[in-house]
Image (cartoon, rainbow, N blue to C red; front, side, top):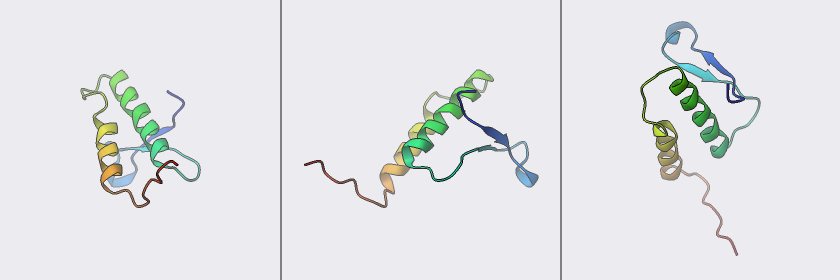
Amino acid sequence: TYQTSLGGGLNKVAGKVFRIGHLGWLNEVMVLASLSAAELTLLDCGVKLAPGSGVGAAIQHFRASAAVPVAEAA
């Protein structure tokens, strides 16, 4: 759903995690979109979670650990 490929965990983490399918490189915005789709899917499946909680945590992480500073617009 939501044009996203999700897969189940394998081996020791089977039934505990899911994987987000992608081809190639991802930037922060692409990761946030994927997490948003995952949250929507979990909500659709009846999982109790605060909408935006995963995306919000990822945003906080990206802002706290940005390796490349954003250039100021001229």
